[in-house]
Length: 315
Length: 83
Image (tube, rainbow over all chains, first blue to last red; front, side):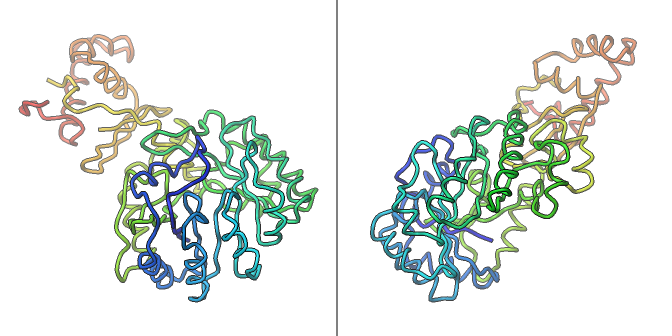
């Protein structure tokens, strides 16, 4: 998996946005030439999906042309949108075959996409939600799925911090409260015939006892999903993921695969992997047995304290 | 130089070299007190209470621990004027 951030432009201003650091560093729209290089990179890495992000990717002035370029090369196109898209982009998307183009709409409860947009996208649209505090109840998504006829699959994400700070994020001390809500939501989704899934950063200990066991395979890889996903920025630089954008970046490599680049990023970030989001992670048996990698690395790094060597009175 | 408090001590990360060390108590207390600006003598005095050590043992523990951290690059060497 790797994401192509085609533009830094956005028409929302989410306080939890963890892309804002990367967006500041690479402001602008991706050129067709860079997009082609990004597709080359995906192709030689054996990646079949062109995942287009932003900002709001549909605000790229040549959005449809770029997406068509990806389709023409045999990729499936997945668009990560906030749902507030220009008419031209919406018109293009609603005319694409459902099996080739999907739109994941990150739903903002206080500023939802219009019902007309969701209806027009129909089975091309999946709904998602980033949780930035325990008061957020994802249950409203089930109503939206039912009402608008979108794909009965919902994805939940956590609002991660940027490693360097600067965004509102879900403090790990509130993970357990979120875990209770998510467990309740999964059960409601199951009863409603909606498949629910979790993005990166969820950890087993945030859920009530027995929840993951009851979920079985549906729990997927909760606890072990933090690894460099690779986000390709509009200027052609690649970062491990948005929250870690300040720590490592490289230009799109010529002739190399995503695995090679991921390996270098993993190596560079390895000193921090001993951390976990909680101080208790150091003595966690689940982690020791490989059932968890300590959660979001950027969230773990927020626990770090800095002491300049020169400030230490070591004489 | 970055560090984090863990359940059983502190984790030290030397970002320049990539070296990572887990330090358990009572040595972790030495690191904590160092970062609060305490002198070696003050640290040794507090260690007597924290780790139930006699004064000589506490001073030796501080001396040996600091030497090991200098060796590992977690502290500047004494001859380094910036240290």
